[in-house]
Length: 127
Image (cartoon, rainbow, N blue to C red):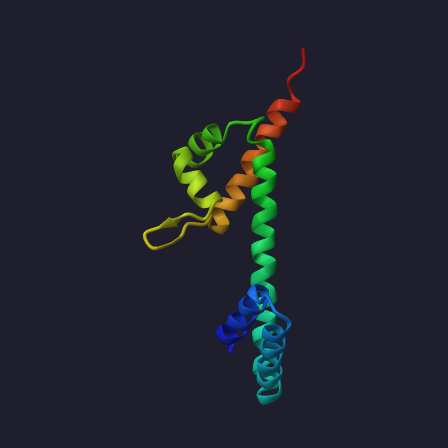
């Protein structure tokens, strides 16, 4: 059901005419009536997926804002022991080995630690 709900959502967002949107709404209503529990579960999954995507976009925007201030290369090398390309692949969710590269939970913790550590180091400097 989740895949069908996603497909309807995507079709609706791309629909350009009122007739297309009305047809999609009819299909949506039919699915909801046929199996209310599966519909609710699929909707919850869609909402969760959207929230996850939004969270990732916010994080990416925050890192983009500071990338002119601090070195992503430094973070990648010093905190992850990796290349800047590795870091950007995960940040941009590039396709690597056939699937989007993402940060693991541990890597997100490491990134948060790195940002706090750099912040402390900068905050401790005065002239």
